[in-house]
Length: 102
Image 1 (cartoon, rainbow, N blue to C red):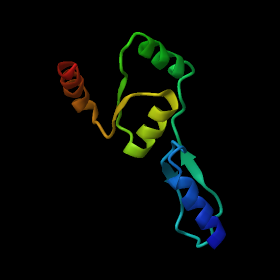
Image 2 (image 1 turned 90 degrees about the horizontal axis):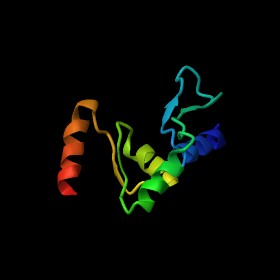
Image 3 (image 1 turned 180 degrees about the horizontal axis):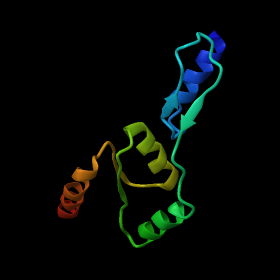
Image 4 (image 1 turned 180 degrees about the vertical axis):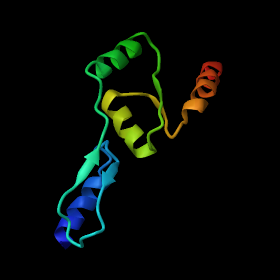
């Protein structure tokens, strides 16, 4: 049990496991399974970000995801700036603010 829990905690602390969300049950003291929930990268995400970089532009990502998940995804596709935990109603004002910053 202790070994299973240690492995589970190491898995969830890995910054390159972009899931960050897990489901568990407290009905049993024994770990019987693990479910991690993660979005997957779009097929052409890396190519799209790379194309924008070739134009001399930086890429920003606004997401409602938690910071750890957002940073892991951004690192995978080389996104320059990440703002996590942005609510849908905040995104328009955040985009305007970024546009104003240049």
